[in-house]
Image 1 (cartoon, rainbow, N blue to C red):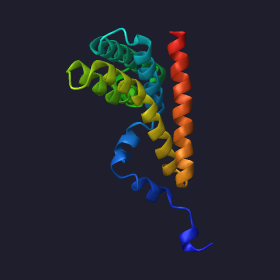
Image 2 (cartoon, one colour; image 1 turned 60 degrees about the vertical axis):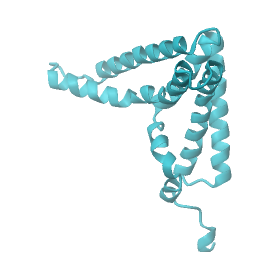
Image 3 (cartoon, rainbow, N blue to C red; image 1 turned 45 degrees about the vertical axis):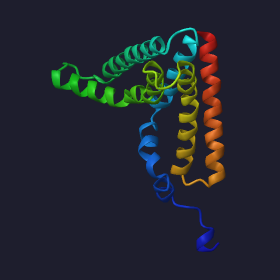
Length: 179
């Protein structure tokens, strides 16, 4: 196998992502992937009968409450000292917040899109549709960049993007049906 036939190193593949790498890194956590699916399902549940402002407030409020619950649960699960100290509790809270921040990151793209509808930059229907489908696009990017991070060839990156987006879409649809 010649030098040109060797697969790209993972670090080279990640560098090749260029400006989307910070975005991909922010979404590369379990809580962010869960958050993307959650946010998309919340938007879908509200449907097109509500205004973008109502959908935006519902989504931000629900995810905010769930983030606080995740941080609380994480802090309680981490705090194992026999005699709880303020410093120990704060350390557990910081660690839990860091682990759960992906839930908040997951809201950025869809809420900005909904905000364009609220502000009249885009029509409300278009802003809603874009916010709803943003989750699928974000999941595709996560799949693509994950495969790139592992040094996979271009076709495997595209396959990972399609599989990740499709599985996410299925979960989102099931979640919307259940609610």
